[in-house]
Amino acid sequence: MLYREKPGGIERALTLTVASLLLLAIANFSVFMTFEFAGRDQGNRIISGVGNLIELGYAPLGLLIFFASVLAPLLHLSGFGWVLWQTHRGRAPSYLGPLYRHLEILRPWAMLEVYLLGIFVAVIKLSQLANIDLGAGFWAYLGLIVTSTASYDAVDSREIWNRLPIKEERVPA
Amino acid sequence: MTAVIACTVCTLRSIMPSFEDGIVAHCPRCGEHLRSRKPYPEQRTWALLIAAALLYVPANYFPIMTVTILGKAQSETILSGVEHLYGSGMWEIATVVFFASIVVPLLKIVGLSALLVRLHVDPALGRRERSRLFRVIEYVGRWSMIDMFMLSILVALVRLGEVATIDPGIGATCFAAVVVLTMFAASSFDPRVIWDEGRRPGE
Image (cartoon, each protein chain N blue to C red):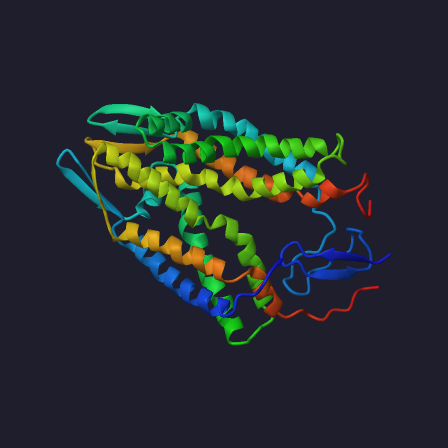
């Protein structure tokens, strides 16, 4: 068997996408982890790394990391959620096909799963250096990977394409 | 002669009056530009690959970060970072980082070069394997960003002034550029040319 459509996939993917967007907000706005060294401690949000990189003269690197870990996942999840919502309601406005095409092109640049491994490596390196306390931001990231992976897994992109309209066009002779 | 072209994004098949590239056509479902082959796939991929290969040298030679603890500074390169992970007994994660940061960039540069060379040397041999190799290269490329993400998290968290600070190094910018350039190199290659018999359609 090559392929079979999973029933209710679009609805499940939609629910998981909404959950992912909420977790993405928590992951970025709450304290990620507290780092304690020689009696001094510091709690920080994960997004401040981007600001620090720019301040230290590493703007291109900082912006790339911001794009891959925050902006692209945010755009991809919200766009994907919108396409799912429209197809769930049985609507297919003409912009939906081009929108979904841009999302498919954006997808490899939304690197949440890669980011999670980066988080693991950073946690391991820091735990050898000092005491660390994992904050809400860390757990939100972990949950986010589960919900976003499950949401992309719940529906095959073919199911979405099959529901999008094909513009009738006369072939130029 | 009419031609059938599958959209590279949404896979919808469209009937075209011919394979010639002069005709501007867009996929009636997703709006993607319909072309029998991407423009100049070999030249573009070579250009991006050569740029990536050149930057690969400083990316591995210069430190990606400097850790300063109580006035003592220690620089870390991509390779020494992996060594430290192995040295501290975390061999599972060290192996992941070894693959992502060292094997994957090399596989992309060497593998894509081999694909390009093989278009002219024995092009008929092993087409299936080469198509598969391309799909692997395309898929694994983004995983090399692990070290860059780790760096941005360390730079965010460890800023305790004199006590402990982690600063980025120029190697990181070079390494990130290698990842981005090889991702673009893979997407400018057109795997359909692997299957072309001699001349391309429309040529």
